[in-house]
Amino acid sequence: MNEFKRLHKISILSEFLRLIRRLVIPIIISYIIGQSTTQISINPELRKIIILACLLLSLIYGLYRWITFRYQVYDQEIQIQKGLFIKNNTYISKDNIKSINISKALIPRMFGLVQLIVKCEGTEDNEPEIKLVALSKHEALRIEHELFHTQLSSKYEIDSSSSKLLNRRALLLTALTSNSLLPTFITISVFYYQFDSQLNKKIGIPVFNSIPSTPIIVIILWSLVLLIVVWALSVIRTMLRFGNFKVFINKNKIHIQKGLFEKKELIIDKNDFRAIRIEENVFKQPFGLACIYIESSGGESNKRNVSTVLHPLIKKHKIENFLKSISLPYPALIKVNSLPKQSRFRYILRKLLIGVVISLILIYISKLFWVISVPVLFLFFFYGNLQYKDAGYGIHDNLFLLKKRFLNKNTLIFIKDHIESISFYQSYFQKKKELHSISLIILSNLSKKKFKLIDTSKSNELTIHKWYKKRK
Image 1 (tube, rainbow, N blue to C red):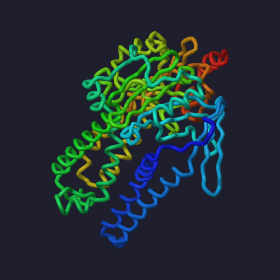
Image 2: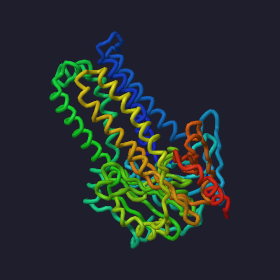
Image 3: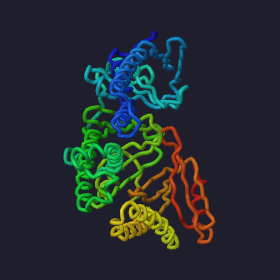
């Protein structure tokens, strides 16, 4: 491999579709503005011309990327060459490459191709990875062999004897208890707000401006319909994401495969682990279920601060055995230090203030909402007390355990040698009650990630500090 090579021509289509996904939101906004009844409007013909121009430019850019993007692999580095008039040569040393992942993206897979992702510590444009979006499987294996000197074989397979498979029942339960309900609801609410006048005229859905004069039973019924639609979309999204989910163990590496249509594979070295996060959302917790995430210095994608799903659905009593099976720590018998009693009032007060603001906003929208102001205040009182009860920390050998709740209950396990720093800070009001807050920083997905525990006892600062100082 001593000469420059281009990607497969299918990469033109992949790049075209990638740009189209980025243009979807601007195109929708353009359509919304055109449909608006306000004075701002765009001529329908002009709008079509703009959309066609965007599609044509995306196709031209995909062709340009294919022509100008070339790569070359040596024994100790990979060279990427980009640009037509201004040549940009990027050299990435083998020592800076953290991992090489071969995945089956939807478009390349249709033509028997794979996508090669080279994860590294950084390039000139500050991207944590390089994507070769369309290669033959044999070519991808050759690159991996040149850089990592791995055994060259005809198939990219690993031993599946230790795999953990998510069956159909577990996949459906994962989708039904997914916490993607809230972002899906917000997205649909935004579009509903933009189209509310058209919806009211065509099918009689109550709009925001008509809420004060709309019967409360109509509002409740349409809210239930919206909730069912949102839940269905959330279930479909989760099933597409975690279909065919598998976890393979291969020596010191963990292979995670997922995706119903677009299959993805992630390979993580156990030495890159920084923390384990066990999340129990409001849907999973009543059934004793949880989701396991890992924080690593590599990560799942080029998006920063993104946690990697290690297991999307697992019974709480099976977590310890699962983590032990892949040689990851889980201190089941660690003593958890709960928050002091004087912290309870602060947690409840902060949430009650939020409840008061929300109640006032609802009453301002419609006086009919005063009947739910008391339940709202009680709900936030209960939420504040729940946050207080679920928070705490513990120390066990070289592990630091932190428990907290925002909406979901999280249990985090940190390895001492991978904690970048521990900070203690105290406000004026905390000082009166002899409280302080703890902040831990780790390196996750090539960026810093901070975790906080608020209103802990000030007397424990010395104990934590001594524990942290005794590092390898």
